[in-house]
Image (cartoon, rainbow, N blue to C red; front, side):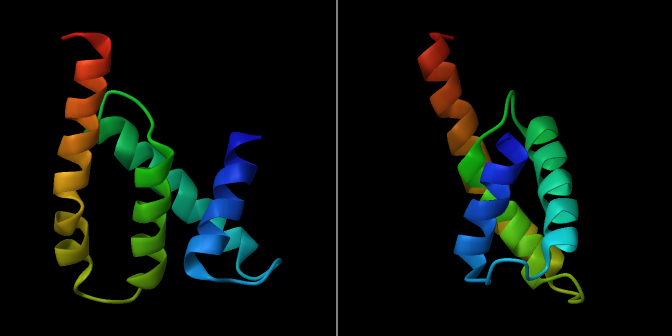
Length: 88
């Protein structure tokens, strides 16, 4: 259910029509989910959709490392916000 919701959010983010790229989008969502899980304490839908969009847009580009590095402030901020919510 969550994967379907994220898939819909990613399609909206990328402005894709229904049915377009469904198979590859699930691959990018899975990769993004794993990346965010490993980079933070939990899952953040916003970061997952943002990262999946980057993976989709830069899938054949050499500049993907720059795009992923641009996400670092968002990942740090999400972790800090989660720590504040947890009281640590």
